[in-house]
Image 1 (cartoon, rainbow, N blue to C red):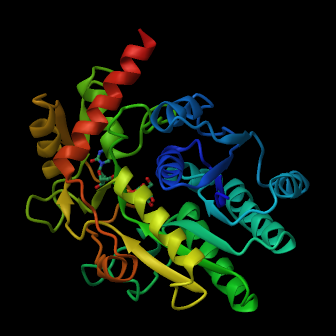
Image 2 (image 1 turned 180 degrees about the vertical axis):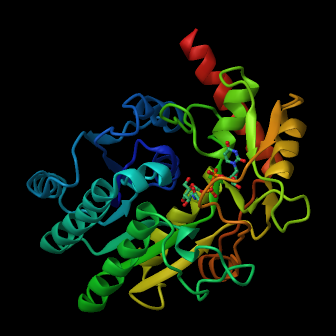
Image 3 (image 1 turned 120 degrees about the vertical axis):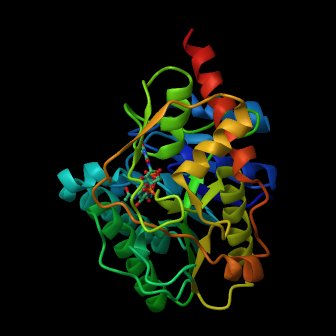
Length: 343
Ligand code: UD1
């Protein structure tokens, strides 16, 4: 019998790519998502790639009774991969309580219901945002977690601590937190990708929307940072590489290869890329010249951060395989697919 995995936020950007990789690896995937920041048509995309349409519950994880019903209906559930959360940094500053309620209550409900239904394992979607502005680069999992720069960032820090403490009290369960650096790109088939709400805050959707004519120009937020070309540096990894990491993390938990019942891994390429280099990678991948100008710094931006992914390389046997130029090419294919859908 296939192992059954509940993917919360499974119609979201990273969730949908992970659902595809899980199905390809032989798992049965069940999606819970309230479609707050995603579209139900993503299930069609998953179906087009895998030939499988995951069972879907349009529910909010903050509704504990509903969650209980789903776990009862789906029993036995082998593991949960938990993506569902609000994720806009700027919005979280304006609506902190909404972020705390949504991101933390949903996690607490999930952990309670998992205990009730004896679900043994969880993979949690965390972020390099927990490191703040790092003092040393690259960042390892033991680099200090710094005071969060936003309520969103705090929900990731708090989420990790809630899981760590819960696992410490429950030796019969296990969990892994995955700290993502900057996921970009889309599935190479262009059946799924990122669907930003309104004006994108993240770099790559802004680049592709500018290139396709939806935005006038990209504003590069600052060229006076202490970096070789003055623009900020990040570690951009392809979303399919990231999705694959969830499959190997899950396998580690299911097969019992984990060394502790709570573990944390950085997921990145290990290479820092500046905003200007990212633009150059896009232009190289697509042959499209991008219109951009340099403006002032964005409040709260980190100057430079990239991962030391050696723990994930060693322990999970995982490393990124898709480079930034290839990643940009998939992002562009996806943007074109969206345009063709509209017209
Ligand atoms: C941001 C969040 C991070 C969160 C992640 C989720 C901040 C400070 N960090 O990461 O906590 O986990 O999103 O996706 O908001 N840039 C431009 N022009 C643009 C957009 C971005 O120059 O129009 C630059 C930014 O200054 C940054 C880089 O591109 O240097 C990447 O930005 P972005 O995609 O927003 O990601 P992060 O800031 O790394």
